[in-house]
Amino acid sequence: MANSDTFHFTNCLPQMAAFNQKTWLELEDYILDNTRRWKSRVTVFSGPVLRDDDRSYRNIRVPSAFWKVVAFVGDDGKPSASAYMIDQSRELGQLDIMFGQLKTWQRSVLQIEQLTGIHFGALAGYDGFSNEERLTGTRIEARIRGPQDIRI
Image 1 (cartoon, rainbow, N blue to C red):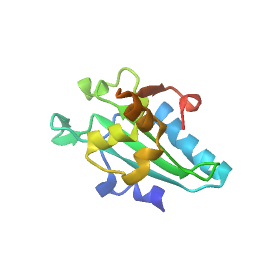
Image 2 (cartoon, helix red, strand yellow):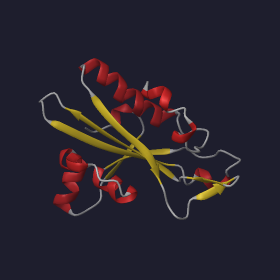
Image 3 (cartoon, one colour):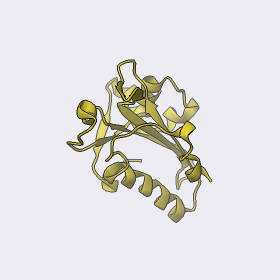
Image 4 (cartoon, rainbow, N blue to C red):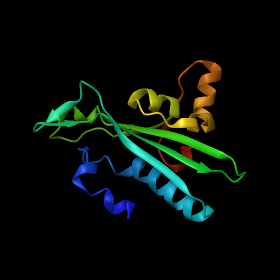
């Protein structure tokens, strides 16, 4: 049911042609496959990073980036969370011509909260990236090229 809800126009946002291909798709598949394998329940929040300077295409604003926050209970029975972002701003330079490769990054839940203004409650406390950022005072991000790069 949730999958079919993604096809309603009220839930749609313009994306570059290659957006839901390769790494972003592999990330979604990784989450689904492991949910089935571990027989666990996962909650996934997804949305755009909306900015005042987002470009327009045919009078429709196109977000430069999208995020995903994943919450689940780990094998140890403790809550866990991770966050990801894909940036398509480079590809928006020429909206009619696709070039370059979209890059997917693992980021902290704290960064997604700051970018979107959405607060995910206690989830940042269960996210290793957010906890490390609090300890070190520096922003953390890791490039995701495939499922092997995902850190939970």
